[in-house]
Image 1 (cartoon, rainbow, N blue to C red):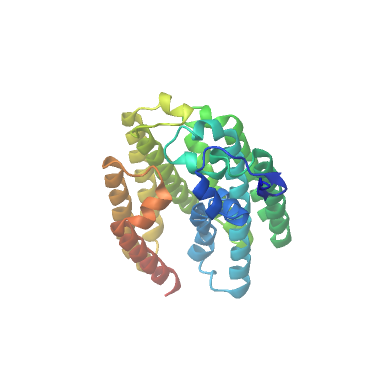
Image 2: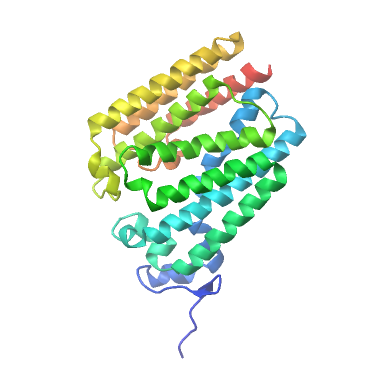
Length: 303
């Protein structure tokens, strides 16, 4: 007898590129979770950065609002990933790693992915509005920016880097909006510089990969991206030093901050960086420097 095909969100799961054994192991819930890319949610922890720098993160109300902002950006970013996966499914099938994504592998039907994306975006914006109207405005800006990236801007040289970096900045702005704190010029320069550094590093690594999959990569050169990396890191370090030197307890956190950027750039030259979230969690040096920075940063703010 023939078995009825499994479904996700009311749409049949497509048979195709995924091995049969893999399809039997993964339940519809596991497929949906994988399609939302929970590993990428680490980026959304940036919502805590502005409240932490302002010294208000330990207040219960602020902490609750920041946690809600984290959930908002998890929902909105996952909606964006689903939209990207639907648009890129044919191209992803040719990539050695991306071909295992649920839409590209045929485990999740494109219509089901789009329905889920719409539901997550609406839920995220509704939650943001319940927290603070300003957070909803930032969330709507994030959705508009990422949608324009998916449709057009990812094919435009430098614009694709700037838009992705702006997504990181909007996360920090969303955290500030949720907590009701202001943002200094130095803070915005540090966040923007670090975001541009990470995104340019990702393009740098992708340019050297054996299977480059982005249309915009053909317009980049390794020399040009190295210049972007140097400029972004220099701007971030200068702005961070200006901020840190204003209060003596903050100064020590500048050292692991600079060393972290230097370590990351060294790893880029060694061929890593195509998946920044994996590199940051896997490299022991980055982890130690990151934890040391977090400790000194916390002491400098709250002590």
